[in-house]
Image (tube, rainbow, N blue to C red):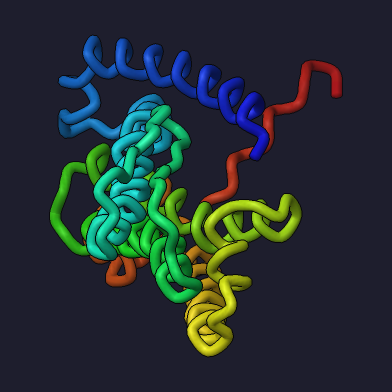
Length: 225
């Protein structure tokens, strides 16, 4: 596991998160007022990407640790570094137990991602709140459906290495089918016109809105042209 690279990436994200938090503290009234601007949209997206992700990472690791405890481990330790983490335990697990432990973290991330998207799309929230939740939810699904499996495939480590190579082929097959179906559903959702409209102006149940996609007007010609 490239720990050094993760530390560098986390440090970069943490600095960006602190800048975002400072801007949020100073401008939260404007972010939540009735006027929706491009600056509001950018800040809400950064909140979802930088400030909501650390709790989601901790919940991912908590999923691993909880299942370890259910199997009798007395010493699961969550090593949490804001934008990445891992769980250790001295207890040896059977192949099936190792499979379930490995699956628990991604399952939490998967459920959290869909839940955040559902809340953002269904409930009458302020646009900034809906966009922050949707951004974080989308990112969680990208991580669990694309990036985490890719890291396991290319690097030979991570949760999905154990999920697909733990020696429980039937369970791995079921996860693979759900994984492929979920990836197709996510791609379909992100490709909807109303979903693209939602990223510009978040509103509840955007599929009921008649979106009109506009093209920016061309710049006027310079004098003499």
